[in-house]
Image (cartoon, rainbow, N blue to C red):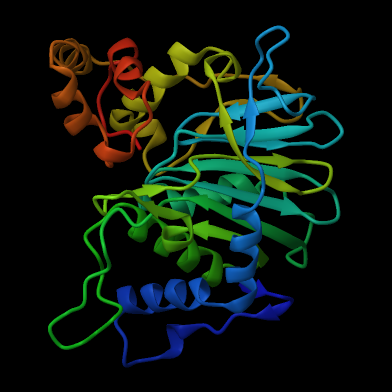
Length: 321
């Protein structure tokens, strides 16, 4: 169940006048308008973005400590006694989800990229975060996603009609899943969708922040970006794994394991690489830059300057955020 300011958030599931999808949309839109969450989003946007680099004597590294970095569709749970920070970036239509046990400080971070991985993914995140009972108080932060397309109104005036976008259905599914679970989820940060959107002079929309960094010992969260040196370890293998995981039945509907909490080691769980994917990767590498951007991104106009180079270097199948 979702709490805001220590108070249970109203559940629309009992309303028979709304369809299942409209109930989820309504909950999300109501959360977005909650005064406490609007205020927390404004405060988050006023924070200085943490620019993380592991280059020796790198001038951009503004924080020091032990990190766990996550690529798309990965998750990790960190123990504050062993790890100082967990972070992710390169999210445009994706969402960075943080769930932290207030008492123990155990913190799980996931780079959510699809509504299909939300249900099982949150269960994965909670497996090492929960205490032995369901009374655990959990703080939740969501950062990422933007208004990649405006919310559409149906002909009958229904303002909760499902929009044709990537960000909104993912955010809607996250809220819906948290609300229906037994655990107590205290939403602290909701810097998503309209709260994470800026426009250029031509009216094109972009995310304000593409990443976040959470401090395990305190639960503090910051906007963040990471350079190539800090997107580690095993960047090539992990980027390829994201793509091939879409056709690996072992990872269907799941987040990808990356880090072993108990041993404090990165353990890169395997994925199957098929001949079909080899052909797709080869063909992708032959495409011009514009076609790679159009084919591989859910938000072509909002990608970073290294997106195309990354796709050429780590070509695979599936759509990236």
